[in-house]
Image (cartoon, rainbow, N blue to C red; front, side, top):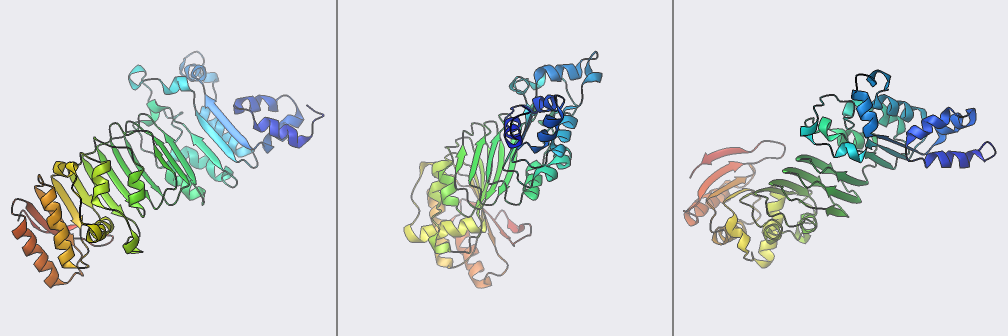
Length: 371
């Protein structure tokens, strides 16, 4: 080993799958100790045996905290492009009912912990993988994705979330090259993404509440698997004032992807795109429309007659609709707004109408309820 070129030795050390071995190499010779700081990857995995030793009264005093080992490794390397930290598969399979563990030594998405080492290694970082010990993390909220984005100005270009027990997720991206979600237990999901070139979802077998924001709604919804359990759906379009005429999002796509929605909330961008699609080709019937009982829509009045036709078409096709809330922008023409209110209430006598106002950056306000 002493006769090998230093760059080759550093490359060999970089290929070690567990940085615990790297720590051992440092003790073998001065050369390895020096070159260990040139590795391009840091990988550390907490095994089941280590976890058990750290909990045993006889051995826990001799076990160095896992986070301390990783932080020391990360701070000593000079330039890395790959970091991986996590727990062994045998630990990930432990049930919450099998162990009582309220410590945080393996809560690896803890923002305070990640903040200790990520700024040091983020300069050339191209790959980052963190896997938590579910028993410690399932009841703690983590904002680690926000920290990662703030440290890595061009990240995440690609994002994979593997979290089989995660029940609530708020994810905001700009234009990632790839987003892969394997989160089958999600109940509540908020996704905001300008555009996802490669968006893949393994399954959403339990998802009930979904909020989508995107500047390419039509494309994003088309990549979702059929989500038959979703009852509450909120949709809005980002940058919807740009090239509105070219947008392709229509309500039909929503009911095809989410056939059992009972409550639908349309932001001003989503409504404007859907109304534009309606103006060009009408509103096609879908059996799923009969499941809908409530709509909240944030209107933009480009042509009050087109808006009325769109509202009436929705009322005619959503035969079980019982509650319709329409919000107008304060800058809308008062005459057009008054005409809209009176003609809607006259046409849809079976529906409980609510009227309000929406404004960018402010909470919705209600003017009348239960008309």
